[in-house]
Amino acid sequence: MTLPALLQSPSRFLFFTGKGGVGKTSLSCAIAIALADQGRRVLLVSTDPASNLDEMLATPLTDQPARVPGVANLWAANIDPEAASEDYRARVLEQLGPSADAAEKATVREQLSGACTTEIAAFDAFVGLLGADSARFDHVIFDTAPTGHTLRLLSLPKAWTGFLQDNDRGASCLGPHSGLKMQETRFRAALAALSDAAQTTIVLVTRADRGAVREAGRTAGELLALGLANQLLAVNGVFHATDPTDAVAAALERDQAQALAGLPDNLAHLPRLDVALRGFDMVGLPALRALLQPAAQTAPSTQTIARPQIDGIDKMIDDLAQPNRGLIMVMGKGGVGKTTLAAAIAVGLAKRGHAVHLTTTDPAAHLSFVVDGSMPGLTVDRIDPQAETARYIDKIMASKGQGLDDQGRALLLEDLASPCTEEVAVFHAFSRTVAEARSAFVVIDTAPTGHTLLLLDATGAYHRQMTRHLDADSPGKVTTPLMRLQDPDYTRIVLVTLPETTPVSEAAALQDDLRRAGIEPYAWVINRSMAATQTQDPLLRQRMRGEVAQIARVQAGLAKRAYVLPFASDPIIGIQRLLDQS
Image 1 (spheres, helix red, strand yellow):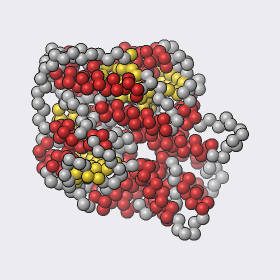
Image 2 (cartoon, helix red, strand yellow):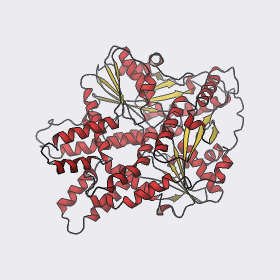
Image 3 (cartoon, helix red, strand yellow):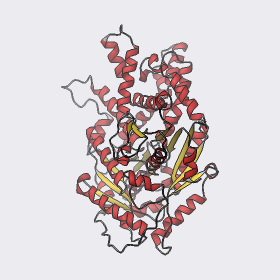
Image 4 (tube, helix red, strand yellow):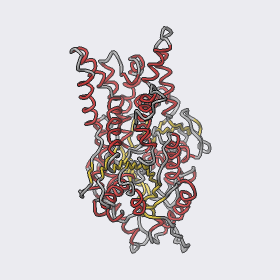
């Protein structure tokens, strides 16, 4: 498919989804600008809790649509989970009526303090943009969170309409039934709009690499199962080497060609849009407008590019190994390489003779693919939401349900059918995993930033609940997961970024969020640095100059400790390749 064909007859609703780091925000912004330049009224909205839409458009945004300066007919907004949660709480409390006393209102507000409420409230704001709230726009374009979070979002209409259909009580973690029941009509309308091919197109964004392509194929299948069949494949960052004798450039082009030649069947038949790799960052209107224009040939440059003076991750792993135990959490925006780094750290610690448990909280779960092997001392698994939910339900039925009659057990089981139960179950599994680090190394590959922040929000809510009634004169009776995350002798947080403007800004924002929670990051890792290679390709060298500036930015005060993992011509997959890095 060509770009003019896409812009000629676009759907009313466009969803850009895909693995983190593939360029969803860049492409959604560029398409939104192109449609607005044609005179169509366009709303661009981010559903990512870790949105960087503000930086891309170079304008501050809120949860209310605001005009984008420099683009007539374009409005943009970020769905703010906190603002959406407070609005949802106010509406639920209003349903209690004037007879409710302060104690009853306090109880309901406490029920509405967790991550489940944050998720459903943000979803409710999203639903509004599929209905009456979008009536004044010709197109609504959604820049979504990385795949796992987005699949959860898009599955909520079906999950919640099914839960509400025969439920007269509601979900205990979301307040009284009226707070949910008032949403049922909106949820059903959202499900209808998402499933209507005449209204909605899903744009599956990928890079031309095997991991991103595999994720896009999995996502396409899951969305089809939800009834979202009108799909389009957009391949971002397609590269062609100027000099075939340049080893780095040739390897990059070869790897991309192999990835695209191996598209799974459910992607190969889709209409496809290829977007060329550019030598500049996708920040600001000029860059976003240029993204969809024909790429001009980059002139060769003889300018010397100084390689940054920065340690590799082998030095970081040496330092991490010193305590002989502890929790290491690898965090960052989607697509920056968290899974590869977490696997390299775990393999490196095992190589140094330690017992290591490597796991992931990411619903997309790429860890086993990256490790692809075994070695002494290394255990690899994942926190499986479905398995953890089943375990949690069994535990609750065996404890709270033990003394209930058949009707009471049926009501309890009905309450546990709420989609919120999965969030609670995953939190409990996360807490168990955190506790293991008292006597061994635990390395956690976290989900992309937004999803991880929701998990940390649940951790904070649990901490507040557990400590609220403690005797101030009797400290130390309870050690919550949050306390362990805040303890630098117990937990080391490693932030991963790419050497580009937006990923560095996103990592800095994540660091600020962690610090507000009393958690201090241990180190930053700058991944896939082209500046650490010897390539002479003009386009890649143009990107290298930008990288050097961003590495200097990290070293100049953002990170207490900074390390680099160079760009690899061959994918870092399998135990031996991971050992080579560590």
